[in-house]
Structures are given as C-alpha cells and as structure tokens.
Image (cartoon, rainbow, N blue to C red; front, side, top):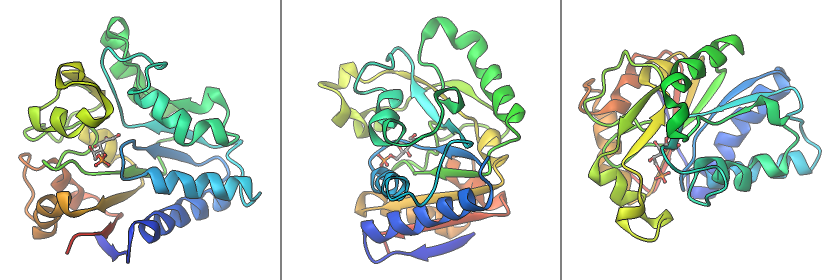
Length: 237
Ligand code: F6R
C-alpha cells in the first residue's frame, strides 16, 4: 500500500485526478471504477477541467460506479446516478452506453447484481477503482462484517452510515435502509485502487487502516491484500 499525504483537499483531488488522467492518456479505452460522496467532488472537478481544456477525451472509456441506494430513482437528487451526472457525466464526452451505475430499482435487484459483475468482466475488468472510506471503514457499501468473497450484492446499511449520509436527505427516515454495492471481491479485482481519505471525521478509520490489521470488521482492510493500492490522504495524521 502506497501512502501519499496531500497538503490539503485540493492537492489530494489533483494527485488523484493526475493518476486517472495518465491512465486515460495511456489507454483510451480505460475502464474506471467510480465512487460518490463528498470526498471525490474535487477529483471530479479536476477531471471535468482537464476535459474542458481539451487535455483528454473519455469518448472510448467506460465507467462502473460502486453503489446505489435501493428505492431511490435516478431522477432523485439524492441518488448516486444523479450525483454522477451532476459531478461528471453531464460535463464530459463519455458515451451514455459506457456509463454504468448499479440500479436502485427494487424490481430489478434480483438479476442486477450478477449482471453487474458480468458487465464489468465483459468490459475487461476495472483498470482503476476510486474509493472513499466510511467512518466505520466501509468501502462501497460493504459494511463491517461483510465477507471479503462477495461480489455485487444487496446490503442493509448500518445506522452509522445512514446517519453519515443523512445530509443528502430531509430526515433520517428518508435515508434508504438498503443499497446495491460492488462486493469486496469485485473491488479487489480492479487492477489498481486509489483510496481517498479526507478530514478529521476519518481519523479513526485512517488509523485502523494504517495499523495493517486485516479483518472483516473493518472492510477497507481487505485492501492490504491488493497489490496496487494508493492511499491519498489529507486532514488526518
Ligand atoms: C460512495 C461509497 C462510500 C463512500 C464513503 C465515504 O460511492 O461507496 O463508500 O466513499 O461513504 O463517503 P464521503 O466521501 O461522503 O465521506
């Protein structure tokens, strides 16, 4: 695991964006794994800026997002579909058919999970996966206790995750109880992983990851078994 300390949020975002931009310049058909949340917002701004400056094109690239809430439709502002459109996809030239965000439609879940892994495999696998980390150590929506062997699946969200994500909803009761997420195995299959950690609320998760202990109680610790992980952090020490 490679650790890079950034001076501030902006620098963290720039370092991460540079890794993705270099990958794309090298391989136009790159497959990116994307994350939502407050941590990668600056990263997406950097990618949009680079595209608008004519520095690169996503026309042949593909993307697969980590997760989505169950029961929240793409036109809902709290959905991860909406987040990705607003932060990235509406502003770059990635083709719609190459953009993949797991479905949050409860009626589609039964088949959607296996289909998602099959689609990733058919695309040749993820070249670089971007991750944030939950205060409880979750990656994607793989909550503590999740088996490392799982591929894309439906999960029940913990109370701490629902509380952390309440900012995107009116009340805690509006926060979905379930989500669809790439499993830890799906994430581990990515050729390269870039994990962003930002802000004092993540200090405990940062310390635990740094300790090197590998346990299903702390899902991000699975990444110690991956051969190419870069952690870019700021606001923690
Ligand atoms: C988002 C995701 C989550 C977030 C994590 C941190 O797609 O999978 O694991 O990365 O909850 O969220 P923020 O960045 O909002 O602190």
